[in-house]
Length: 316
Image (cartoon, rainbow, N blue to C red; front, top):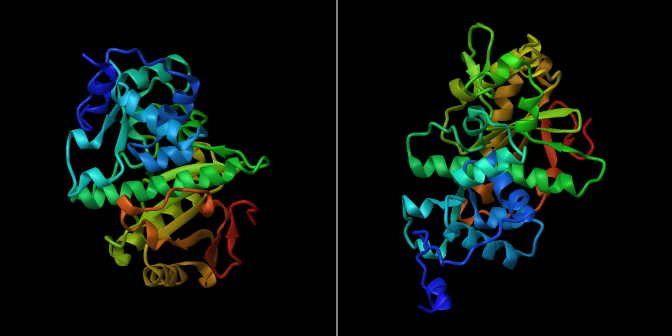
């Protein structure tokens, strides 16, 4: 059998080993496997943007790793197909052999919470398409900020796994350490789970990716109250061992963003607070057509209620 012909005709959705061994490199580990240990699934476009290799090289490696003998990468196309799916980016996920390799090399801890705390891995939106759109929006936001931060030598990006690893032992023993308990006060939820959590140096940020599917009152209002409560009560310190938190709301609609900011004005003392910052990204509304993350959200100005805009590159 001609190996070249076999590889050319391999199914896009079914792993078909060519019989040739693919050597796993450090670039594969840190450019593909590691980000997929933090995100439930990422598109080819997202991984190409994150990986430091040439785009063609990364695309070829994604194909080779999917078809390699064993369980390295999976694709959403194995389970579900979209209309005109051949025209869309593949959506990749980490499989068992890659996970075990990351654990063996000490890249991620051998703990169940790593799986449970993945970005985009815990959405409970009923519709699968809405859930995918929301989850990929959260991943786009965080990847964009991470890519922007790594171009700034003075700014260290700290991901949620690193934050949890430094948290109190009782928190690390939980099934999902990102589910933060909220003190029992009227108007708040019993717990709050950000769509993503990261730090830039000593400043910590929670991300709320808003697709406009939740009512502002009571759902978004309850989230705002819960975030304020975990900071005011010191719960964020007890639970994660951090002493500050800024919540980044990203919407896909300008009017929606203004309405959430107006709701916040009715909650905040004196109608102003530096704890929440807002950005609008209509181009993230449809995840199959979202642009590649290039660092813009790290460099942009985030609007705040009653305060000057926030710069992640120069927090104030």
